[in-house]
Length: 373
Image (cartoon, rainbow, N blue to C red):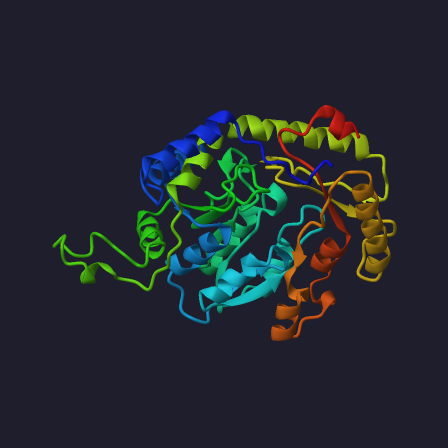
């Protein structure tokens, strides 16, 4: 079976984790600090804060902005469900925005329509590693006094020009889930260029503990300054990630080459809409996601296209190739549809993307013969 993603850990990766296990110090410590410093350097960010996973990274980012409870936050209606869930965790209200089918990212014309004085933040998602149109989003946010949290869970190595995804907005968040560029099983990272936000993030992830809040080192009560969370990364995870980070650029180059081969071999199939790399950007290629379009990809034709997509998934599985759908139309999942009364057609492109997308295997150790097959 050719899996959707294969995790490959080198002997050095395993040794780095083993050293932590043998040290007797497993929780957040020196290894986490080193990873934060190295990840910040890798992405050319001023500050980085590690945490338990990509979802907690989003939650911490929203809490760190200290928005008024009930404030509205724009999220793409096509993303993993955590993008919207984190907004609710922070006692805020998600406002969905449809996407463009060309890049699966938030639609700028739709975004312009829904901005209002009640909107206090935007969470653009760099979907599948394809950078969102951050110049447009930043201009709109600046005009209306809106904060930006980049959901860069899939976008390690993605860039707009020479600027890394996750370093453009007020805060950027990353995931180290097994399908991501580097992985520790679970894990997250938050980037910011603002020192006050960084301090807030690191306080919130550790039960609200601020070691600088009280001069007396033995006066513990005065150092719990916020309602915080236990969102700390372990040194075991940090050691695994830091080891992989050393070869991350090479791993990205391999994914770029595989994406190039796929595009060359599949471009003549007229019923398959291939992913695009937008000029002036660098795709992270966390996923290679196509849209099946036996007929024009419209809301009315979605069921017909979905039947072919589902047939493809089953046929490829039978042939020993694992594929997946791209991501979720969050507004159409049972919880959000029931809570807000949305219909599948409320955000048509997001629904089309969920029902007709197919992700092909892509990872740095995928061989040429496997790509050919």
